[in-house]
Amino acid sequence: MTDPSAVEAFPTPRFTLWVQGGCLTPARRAALLDELDRAHDFLTAWLGPAMSPGDFRPRGAPRAACPPTPAGLVASPAVAPIDVVVLPRGERCHADANGITLVPGHLDRRDGTHELVHYLAGSSWHPIDEGLAVYLTERLWGPDRGIPAKVRARVFLDLGLDTDLDPEALARDGMSRRDYDVAGAFTGWLIESFGKERFFELYAGPQRNYHGVYGQGEKELLFRFWQHVRSLDVRRDGDYHAFKAWLRGG
Image (cartoon, rainbow, N blue to C red):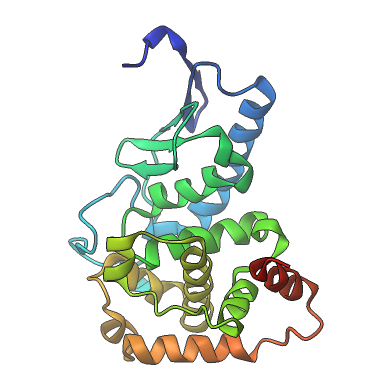
């Protein structure tokens, strides 16, 4: 059980940062709060009325109503101050209805922003939920280690490591780093090809409702996505060749 005296609170207008056991230096604490503030500005503007802060429900359970049509988009929902807890140890960061939980070892890869996406957008289903968080974190801060998710997806494809992103398997077995990368690339392709409004309808609706939203089945959309990835010109792309060599262990 955590000793309450070992937890320090640092309130700001948008967040209350709770730090256990002095696990963040003042400099890292300031950097995290700056990241969260900048991410809050970007995400609330980008998500707009499709936000559903703290709305977490069983995986794949649709909301009472999908986001309204563009003509009905009026105002973004208000966002109350968010609790962000930083623990000294842990295997993963996460978001839930109570706020965000982070561990110091994952802060440098912008997990604060990733989890803020989950909190502000509300829950959805794999791979759509994790894909959105990867895509928007990359949009704001640039790609992880400088290699865009779509380029990573091309490497996986060329090495025979492409995936069908099956929601049942991802929920049952968990998501690997490959799954996160491909989910981010796939989500980005859906948004950039068909628009945000239709994507939000997919995000808030029943699991695997691709045909209801896009008029195309899951297999057809994934086939078109992988065709898009295959069309990328990576012959002189240093990031592509470096990531490919790294995956091969060379």
